[in-house]
Length: 477
Image (cartoon, rainbow, N blue to C red):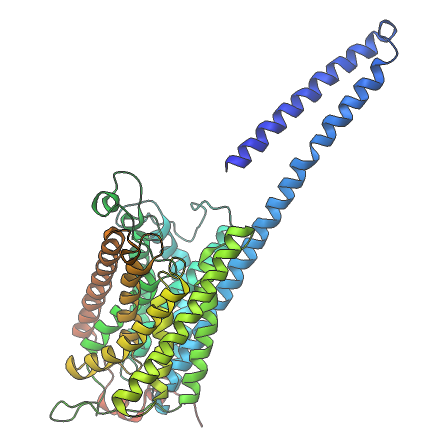
């Protein structure tokens, strides 16, 4: 911005000089006989020099315009990659559940994006980025209120695919026994209200990320909350809502015996699940590096390269940690848990992928990969909550943990780097506040729906499959 004003000032000076020269030129023409012969060439040479001095300013504008175009293309490319995570989620959820419910799983993932996109454009974007304290001022089906160097339409698309991710996480945890119309209702509420409100507190400039002098976070912790790409804002929100929904919905028929012991209900296709995880892994290179929202210039190209590296290292570390933990705990290197370990590492690194070192990223991946396995077991066997795909563990628990670990391992403000406890406490506070909001709202919404219209399909529908009864068609024929 400062360079812009400096360039503008220089132009004004140059144009003033040209005007002065022009006045003298006119005077010379009017009194041509009274001026010496050499004056005219000198004036012409002066004009030529001044005109040539304008060329760098023009070149500067062209360079800035090219840089902005490059940043726009990068943002839209990242949005495409994040959108491609939708089929990734669909494949993971379908692979981890049974054949008779596959069409239902796929339909829910289609509805997440189609309905969520329209609602976020019409209402959610304003709630998230509009002026306001608790929630932004609505700007119905208009984004004209938002000011940005990047095209606001492109920024809207980028934020839309993040909103869709938060909504689709809930689908897997409540799979195989939820009424389809009910799923539409809570998809509306997530896209319209729950996600935009917590997003407003953070990315929308609300109190959690407000680092202005005298703000709550600065007075309390001396620093603001940080979530670069959404460990808490996207994944943890979806994970805690999923946990609330699965808890109120109840377990699938046959999940627990008469003594309350958990029984495995295997998914029908680990090939699909593995393909889905690789698609998600690929899409995460848009999710995290894309959140830089720029690629031009040394600072941005170094930043997105660093985020690429930390993202991939955490994913690899999470997968290996889950593999060996499962191998030691269950005596077999289980593919399903290894795949979720990769996702756990990705979710965990998303908050601090820009702040931690490559070694720090590996530690985050290792911790989240191990934690995910124990979280799955705790939720399943202790809390007796049936989550068919482990969404609440992968996204809720590991999103929370990754956000906190950022406060420990950030190279500049992290506790382990001698910067004090301020940033760590800010991360803990932000993750807890958003977690309480998401779980609390999810619990209230699902409880009301359960008591009024009912969340769950009839026993016969659940036993024979949702595909035929809910959609009139099967995924496999």
